[in-house]
Image (cartoon, rainbow, N blue to C red):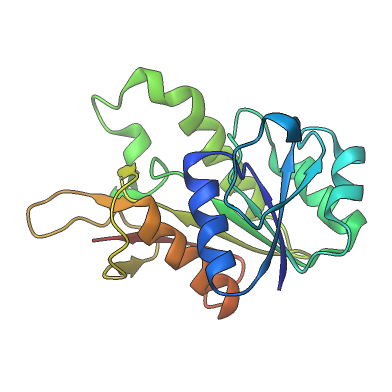
Length: 203
């Protein structure tokens, strides 16, 4: 498939790009400054500002799917969806956040006592992004939330998938490496199981 990745220079985006390339997909990285971009070998870079719908439409045209790994403070759901429609790209996969996952029935991590204030600046627009996606019926979207601890690590290919509840291991730790997250994302790209849904991945 021909995939466009927004946020390809980030920690998660670069690992998703590497995973996609390893499986034979064509990857286009949407970046504001191609001359400064550090990306996996094999990524074709296109200059565009993801927050500018006009630029984005031209950059996305001709792709089979878009993966957004951009910060939710920067890229909002409505203009991104509008750009996909104008570019006639049928699928959107989003690197989500863990804050909107349920920690118990009806209670999400974002609303937990002691949720770090410094994370709210990204977590709150992330929840809003998911809420906005849930009203979308034209684009085939998927929102993949990582576990609470989401960092570079090992590619083990040993993980669990969940739906809307935060996943924890037998020690009560909620975590996933970015490498294993990338596997789950590209698996979903290749074999869609969560059309117009959010799901999560963890150990």
